[in-house]
Image (cartoon, rainbow, N blue to C red; front, side, top):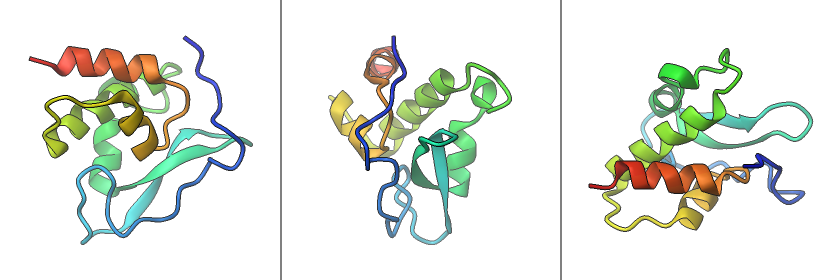
Length: 113
């Protein structure tokens, strides 16, 4: 699995009016980084959701934080959006995820009843 970059110019989404995950509009938004450094990639989440996607092994101090972070995101996405049949591309685009479609797909399968 390659964790590559998205197309040039896709690093930042426009700042939404509400959290992309829980859709709360009453709190401020943080920019959640999927990649740091020169090629920053991320999306906007409220502080609570930002903390939720970084729970457990998804803390940035863990060298392998990205995979558990994406797994946490997918789990919460399914919880908040009641996706009976979620689509990988929808999740990738909604959260401006770098090339981690395989991780999203596996997380969806793991969460499916």
